[in-house]
Image (cartoon, rainbow, N blue to C red; front, side, top):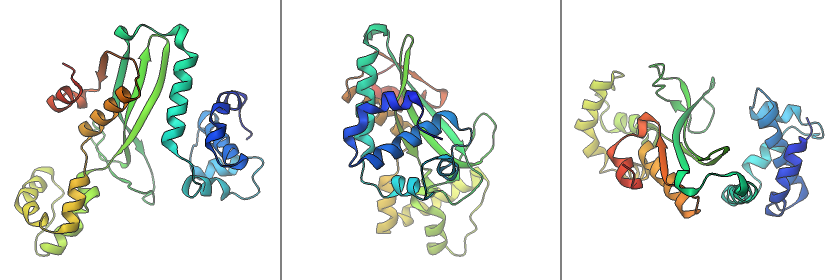
Length: 244
């Protein structure tokens, strides 16, 4: 796999954001893999890169190379806005779409992987839950940003702290009984400084949605309408975004 012509053309605007040519080349290979490979895992991306003598190169690029994702995303958005100015609807009809996506996995070695609720299927597969925003202005449509949602119990390590403080209590798997246990023990767990710090860092999916919409406003993305998936049709998001 070599960088796709479309990637070579459009990624040029990002070149100065990398420290060297090799970093920039890894970025092009990654973008190409996302476009052309059905299996988009890091291992498969590395296997398919033609010029790479060492399959760990791409892995080190993701985990160790000093490049800034936010700056790259800002540059990408500004480039899309500049190139599509002649084709967009007016701002009064422009939309930002908020949704969440479940990325299901078969292994448990991924960072922050957890059992996530798939509401369309009524089950809890292993994966990551992402909250996303997209810009929609007529024929011009492109992604804006993404945030990883982490369940409260995974973020706070609730079961671990629960077993530490209440070793005699069974931690049920049934939702209603589990919620009842939360009410009985959480006030005590919050007296632990580490648990309290983790609790304070937790963000609901709705909070993530509000964060991304405010990010779109800060980036001066023109829009007057927020389209939300049913899971975000709540008072918290409506008040937080100023939308009815």
